[in-house]
Image (cartoon, rainbow, N blue to C red; front, side, top):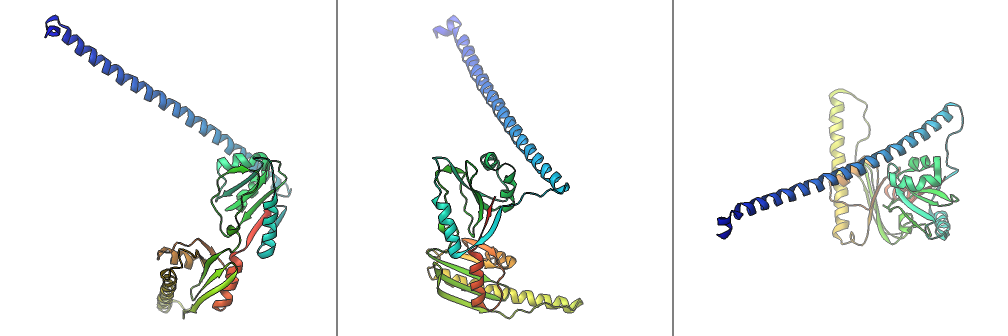
Length: 309
């Protein structure tokens, strides 16, 4: 009451209002300053990315000029398909390499080389970085002195973070059949599934379905034929799903990773229309009866392409 009598109550209220307004303006200023800092950082990142892209464009234009002038383009020094004992030997050699604490880089590359990976690889590889993009998806192993630079396209390309170490980080299960696993081959008219311990098959199931082949007649006859064939393929895929469901229901799924290979469209349809979660899928060209076709598919799948850059 004394404040009211002396006229201080209104002054205190005004002070509170001004302090609240000051706090609001302070927060607004801080938010604006932070926004400007973020904008400056983003602008800098865009400029750096633009510079890298311009350098890459210049590099590609230089390669194009060399091609137009008849000069040989960039090629890997050596390309080879590896499997079995030969693959194990090469992996042992790569695994035996030792460098300083951060002298060896192992990184996975998807469809294109990310900027962070490019920053690590370009100082070592220079224009040969384009060969890494050509091989993607792949693993790339380089040392900081540029003495060793290879890309590997294993059956199972892992997601390896970019990290320098004193050795190359390569796991055998990415390249070779290890432990218990299953490989299923699916074509429009064939199914074959083998359970393996390492490279030894310990279980097998396979069958063929009666699916009509190509048809050359046109008109209504052609349409009827296509409907009949599509129905037969659907029935075959249902048999494949039942076979794989029995495999999963048997309790093998948790202990036995599944690899699904065959005709790309058929494999994709089988995965999309079921609850399958294969460890890997691949398109392979495996013809013939179920058992020999499965053997060809397994051999094709467990093959690694290596390029020496």
